[in-house]
Image (tube, rainbow, N blue to C red):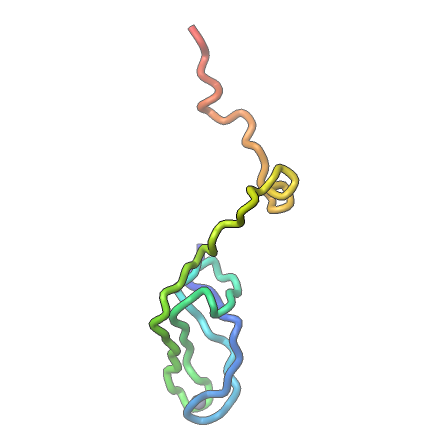
Length: 97
Ligand SMILES: [Zn+2]
């Protein structure tokens, strides 16, 4: 269970100029994964050198889930994404009387 994601950004500290790349954000799924900044509106960290709180924000509204593809995903494609049919789901096990 994560509390934030890492953000795929490397910039110089706007105050002291030292490179920073350990940005975090809570705008994404918060699975401690690395996400690109185009999907979020805010990310932040603390500069190790000058101790400044470095927060970047923007007002642009973000669609975390991009617009759906026109062609539906087929069986092969969803398998490639790791989906599998749930066999023996409890709802299918009702004994008929
Ligand atoms: Zn700094």
